[in-house]
Image 1 (cartoon, one colour):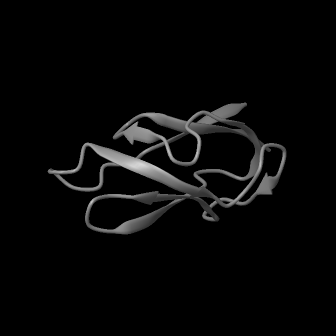
Image 2: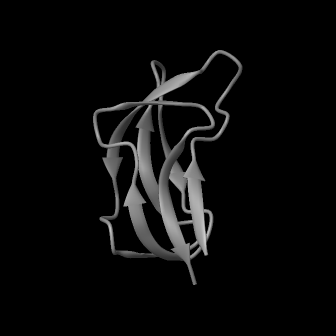
Length: 79
């Protein structure tokens, strides 16, 4: 089953972030809780953890691109 990795709510005044680094490539095995993608706001850098264990199926927002809170960043094929 495919599970979206969505950009979580980071604070009331944060609507958009920049994707700075994907820790995994498409096809890589990830474990629930692994730092999956690094994001940058105007004030801080955060890591978004993998919500489930499985294989990274798709990266929907590439490094250097902007993403909106709630947007799907990637997809994991859950084990």
